[in-house]
Length: 318
Image (cartoon, rainbow, N blue to C red; front, side):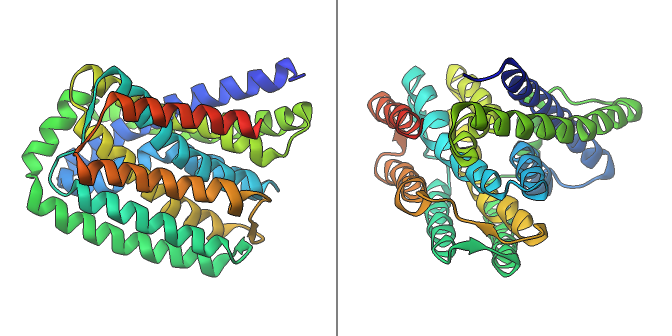
């Protein structure tokens, strides 16, 4: 049976990660605005890393403390949850429109990135060379995204979008407070979440990678889930689907790239990943890309199918 302390660590870690990521991203956007950095550039850097900050700190913490399988399980599980759960559940509430300019290209790139990551994992481990290759690919992705965004959306439009969606601090004191508290909360949440995951795996008698694919991945995907649910209720799902696509690419290229590059030892690919988890991650990405390409919308039936697939996946693992 799971120990109360393990459950407490998990919930505490998720809360601190949510709070830290939220404070850090809002403070960073306000600081960038004061510094005169174009919102477009901030969106491709600060916002992208801010929404994936939980995955980054958890994966780094796991790799540096001797649980590398937990780091890759967190990222792969998060990508699976982002498509099957984060898109599937809100689509049941209201069909998720995905017809914004460039959505088809972005979805296709997400599939290509997923296949690239799968191919690297067939080597049996992700060492420093693989990490550097992923980071190089992330640099190319940033250049592509910057060029595409400049052609499709004005800086003023994106800035107004953030103003509507976020409560940004205005004074220098509040900006500094947000940044400091967010920076402190993230590593604390990561430490609690990793401790809880390891304890829960021991209590359940399963590998830590299983807990990483389920409980930890779900915890680090909560920011995306909350954002997408709110967008669905407001009938503004297009931006949320774009965030899911971007988050998945950042997770594989940047988060795993950084983790593999700084890990003391190569990150081994856990048993079963090549036969189940990675193929499911690629299949989920391909399914979302197919829905965007063919209809430009993820309807209620598709949402129900995605959500049911995620529930089956979790049951099979546990």
